[in-house]
Image 1 (cartoon, helix red, strand yellow):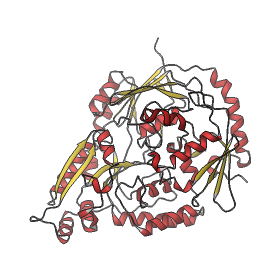
Image 2: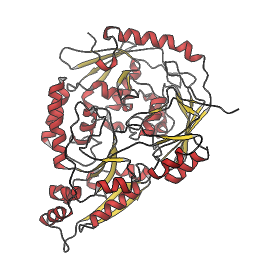
Image 3: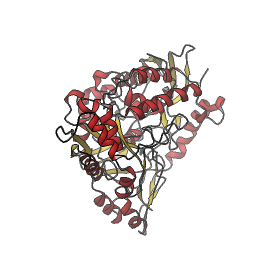
Image 4: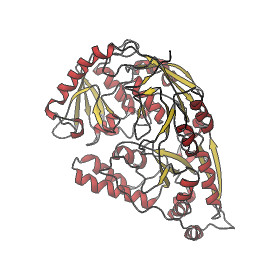
Length: 521
């Protein structure tokens, strides 16, 4: 019997049949409209790869959603919906998960997207020796096996009631593993996929562009002749490009530019919901292993003052690590960390730090990844220096900042790094960040209670049990403070009146399924 998420259905018994019929009938209609126009986008954060097994940036997610296809995907409302998948079901013991998918698709190099290709793609994702940064997070999928031409069977390593959310994330995009092996690192810049677009040009640190994939067949055909992304970390430069009409969309509009853009005749700022949780993720070695030090760092910050004075109100102080919109039925919030400078000083003294033994910290921050990130970095360092910490800011270009997180814990040359997290599922968020040994766990956090609870949360599909389990995990994280919790970032997107149909998810992933650009003349 097929088990289907309630959020996917209007009439559960007809869902898989109806989906296939809609796909079949949509193709002739879509084919009538040829791709038209170029969409130009200026983003603060450049992509460093489009390989879904190693990409961790929203701009990469946007590209992966266009270049690859998936069994499931996350829609604009943060809901899991079927993509290629037609039917799916569990074995009675919950240790085998089978997905039957739509056939007839092929990669842009002409190879068929069949069951063997799907199984190979997932097995590479699950193999830590392949370089996949998501292998630990997806380990519960066990091993993928092709069944005929149109089905893949996951022989689970453990029960996991959150499998659809895992399969809907762009990390689970279906890649051509043979092309990946032949191309090596180049696959990250010119990936071979089966989606409606393909990468046409990639100039690192400057721009990249997508063009329609002529071999794509499916319900989401390309609507644009070209999509060009320009990497422009400086806020003022990005805004100027929109004001002069050189680009059609800019991300992360600073608060001081909102009125200026809204005053333009041909553009405006939209403020969609965001789930981005911005924190300083600690390296839990040396002095930061002491909870008193971690608490001092957390309570010595004037978050309200920074949100208003630096972000211009485009943020809300954290009430938990998990951001709003991250499966809110299972999310819990807490009293914000207090602003108590004297208590912070006392905690440092208790931990053995003072004028004769100053705590030294190096803080990594990106430039252009988050709202006012470089300025925030300097403000944080200033507030920590005010309580006697010898804190130094290190503002890095995005490739260097990203690479620093992949260095083994014991070899890192920094103590904290600014990182934003935004994922739709509670298991996806908590498991990847706080389970012992998972590669996305950048802090080295390890707690037997958390590991055990996360396993329990995966093993049950009972919502009441999940609420209790994940509430406890979130409380432990909030109390143990492996992060300096900052705020939930708000989105501010500048968009030209020429653009229609553009949407962006709460995790800052841009969606282009129905985008059109008016063509002058």
